[in-house]
Image (cartoon, rainbow, N blue to C red; front, top):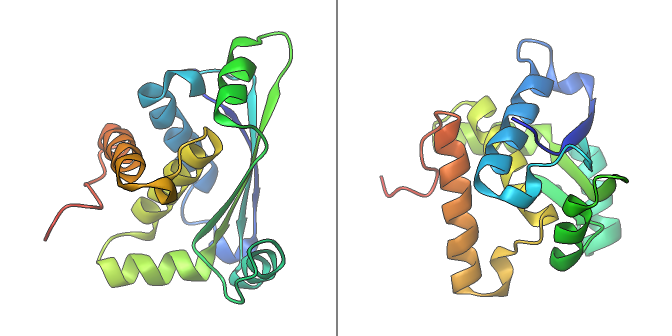
Length: 166
């Protein structure tokens, strides 16, 4: 399937036991399957799989939060511009940057009793949806819409619903 092109930089802290690049590209394909405007390889995303220290510094600088977080997304286009960029096959559109923190992702996965691979896939999907213009912080309806898209994309990857009541 055609999906946004990911330019991926992986910090050694993530290890080599998992093919993180393949996992991230599978997540991008799943997003493209549920969000048609993301089914264009002319859309570019920078994905950095970083350590906690790098994410902490970025979170402090850009969000005034003095701690690491699981994923940061820095959209470069508004929702309506994402649609325009997807339609413009002549020139790629830079959607933005995603940065994941290894330690935070690993701890959250352990706390949830899931694999770090599944949690990372969820966070990549979540971040890509932010770059596509979705935002769970703008209201309950927007949060539900975003969660439904996450559930659908994760299901395509064979990953359980992270929002299911246990």
